[in-house]
Image (cartoon, rainbow, N blue to C red; front, side):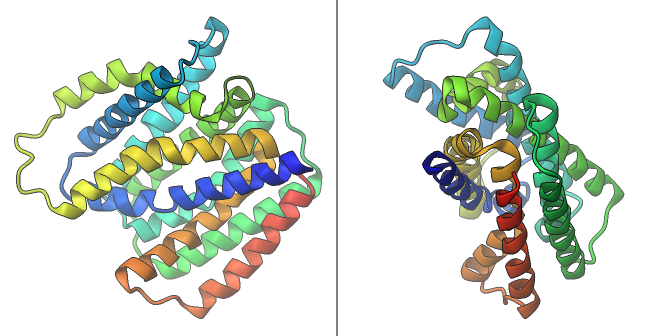
Length: 286
């Protein structure tokens, strides 16, 4: 019971950190090419990961772990950042909330396929209701639409769900921060080459907001958030703790209200309460 509670608390911290990822990415692609942004954030995060691994003298993962690390690297180091960066050239950050609402279902589904988890039937009922509420709210808040952008976001959600589920399983053996650190290190050669090939003609003239956003997605979205997130998934279960992602769009809107002075509609409060109930129900039957 204590382990499960700790897992949900750690997962919630991860979700709070991830809530700023899409808004920060939206700002960053305003001044940086998506390919360079994706590779640069991975290279910066990998440098920090190497420092942590050396500082704590972590042992290298076994050969048996490499396949899982490749999946994690593809899903959360390459796939999700790249697909979202490309998508946010066509759609707004607000519109992307539609798809983040589907991430818990994707994570739970891959948790069943890759981790052998078997949540009760009512878990899926609460999961679908919560996802539908998030998607419905997001659609009501944004009229933006783009077939290309939407397709890229679907690809991002599938990649991220797979990376989350695979990383959760591996975290039980290696530890949460070790999994994302080794995944970053594994992808470093490829991402370094990509960064060099996509290096912009000049970096002068970039606004402070772009640099700040690059720093956020590199340090927090790419590394720190995963320390808490993978630990939460490992302790509390991929399917159950994954439902906390239903709250991520609303945390993002709250950040927008605080930082950008955007109003919070009463409908957001009502939907948030409903989603919290769905998360509680999913936790009960996970």
